[in-house]
Length: 104
Image 1 (cartoon, rainbow, N blue to C red):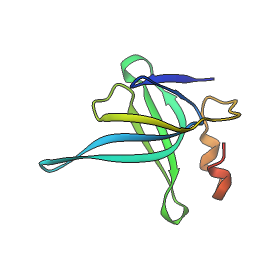
Image 2 (image 1 turned 90 degrees about the horizontal axis):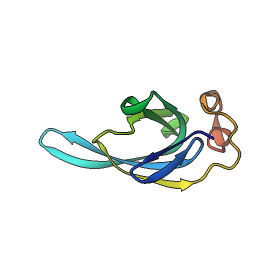
Image 3 (image 1 turned 120 degrees about the vertical axis):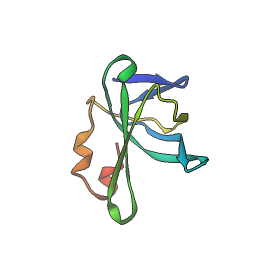
């Protein structure tokens, strides 16, 4: 199983995670939370990134990428561990709709 350590947290493909990241809007900064399924890791070393996907309003899929060593990452929490994941990239979730797109 493909995994990585981010902020002393063990992440595996298929986990449902909450990513806390800083967002700068003008002179103000705030922490934004994005919750979704970890669908891939890509890159090597300092350039390693993770892709998280969730189903937004109207059933529209939303994906975001973060560098694992990025300064914008504040905290990563694992909400639910994946049960049976046999792939390193879960891109097939992009084609699914409804409850199937969330269940891993």
